[in-house]
Length: 121
Image 1 (cartoon, one colour):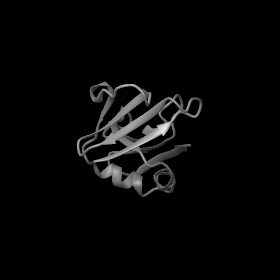
Image 2 (cartoon, one colour):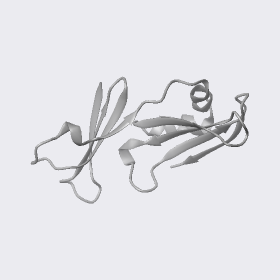
Image 3 (cartoon, one colour):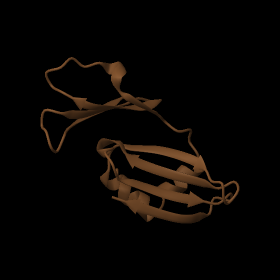
C-alpha cells in the first residue's frame, strides 16, 4: 500500500488524498484537515487487468516521459471499434485529476503494432 496527500493550489486547507492497494486506487477530493476522514467516501479506480499493450505503451518515449514525471498513473485499456481487435491504452495522472488531467494515450492494431501515441501534460 502507498499513500499521498496534496494541497489544493488555490486553498491550502483543501487536500486531495490517494491510496493505492493491490487491487485499486482511491482518490479523496476536498479533504479538510480539521474534519473527520471517511474512507468510504473516496472514488475507487479498479486496476486494469495486465495486458501486453500496457508494456508496449510503456516502451514509447511519450509514456516514458509521462511516467518519469507523474507519480500516480491510473492505467486503462479499451477495445477500438476500428481497426477490429485494436486497443486504446491510457495512463491518467490521478494526483491532478481536475479538468484536463495529464495523460498519455496510445492506439494499437490487433497485431499490437503502434498506430499513434500522444502525451498531454
